Image (cartoon, rainbow, N blue to C red; front, side, top):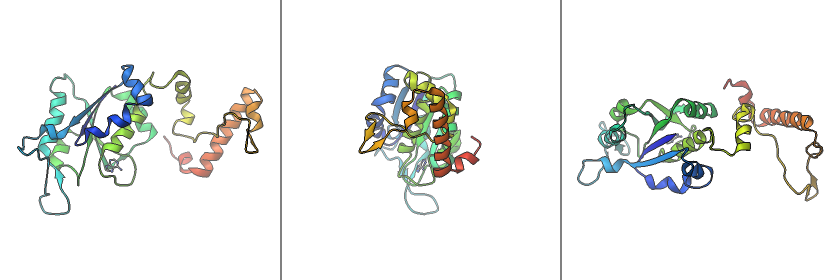
Length: 231
Ligand code: ADE
């Protein structure tokens, strides 16, 4: 799977995405990440990429030209058009099901990160297929949302998680639909608190049903709305 990120701040990405599972996925060739600096595509001699909004109002807008030129530079050598997703609080809220669908339906995704007060509407009309928000709050730019999308989608790609995690992930019950059950590791007693007896019993069926029950209980207590939703 390939992600190309269009951003004014390409340096934000490698420190976050070069380590751990996402770093290994790239090393294994399962994932290709490219960070493209929109500023490299301005024709302004001072390297300017923003300007005042027509009609007035607070802040600056990203200009259409460098954004569209950056996108066209990606697609120039391709015989297909990659899907382009704009990260904005105006988009559909990104959920586990969205991550699953992107991983399944697309092999090449362009993520467009806005800054300042947004991007000239004509660039969005020209290149964007759909918009995603990572939640109902406003960040200073689309970079952190893009990283969240890359991370959540990449772990759905076969081979990216280790064998055990992968089979766990495929049990859709625990992947975005129910909260995880409580987990324990050694020691058996920590500051007087014992690990629940059933987990020490070696009785797999009992362990399984205890975990399911705990998952349901936790979801009911902490996130009851998850049980009412369809995804
Ligand atoms: N850009 C700024 N805030 C955002 C959010 N919540 N989701 C996606 N992109 C954004």
